[in-house]
Image (cartoon, rainbow, N blue to C red; front, side, top):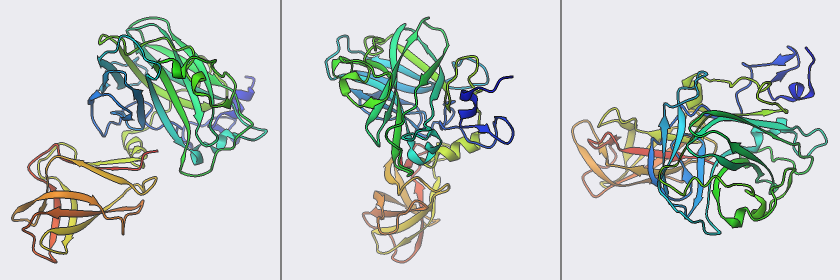
Length: 374
């Protein structure tokens, strides 16, 4: 068999073995099979935010509302879940500034094998399975956020209600090296709807300085024009080298524990919905009758010092009684990527300098969310 340049350029090419190595390198895309969903299904989404499938983000501006949910509708081939995007509030006519694009963001230190900004820069290929009730065109874009450069490709959904495998080739870029850090680097976007602000120009099929009007030129799918519309996607992978549907390396499945740990570098949700008095921090020490400080070890280490949000009812417990919390916040004096310090406040009822637990207050839906997303 002839060894092609694309084969040799693959991120997973093992020079010692002369082949694609399916074991020694983790896939570039975390959760490409959509199996991890720490946030759970989300309804009524009408603005930009991270969504149900871990590591995936929706960018949208004034384009109705959508549900993002895990689905068991898949193309087969080992995939058990897909991300389902369902339009629940439509907007029949687009304004210039409207847009709707799914995205995935990467750390620069995870893309150094791309050799971007050097004479030996590599081409790359993104592949995935997609299904929609609509046919039409959408744009897949790579946006180098470090150097503000981008490149795009128009892709067509040809058959309604049919799983299709789409393979997108992108050229090498000898300009603009990627920072070798944990900061946001290249963002992948799938533009399923857009107004003229992002589509009135000419799509760059070679890397170029970003121009907003060029970003999604050619998109006409209009996912937001009817509440009948939906898109499902799974099996997202990104490889170094140029491939087609026949030569693309097989999707690299990870066991569920490994996939979850990789996602928890960016997001950790405390609270599984399986109990009503789950302990979030075993030891919290009260410093007064109204404040206690706790620590949560972060395994794996997170990408950056996380931010905190919470929902539902929380309490401090001593094994005999619960004292309802009125607030919980990060203790910025002790927060790191490896542990989160929590400042827990109650109106009254603590005994100073005593141990407590941070618990759910008879509410299985109560959660604490620690985020170090890009």
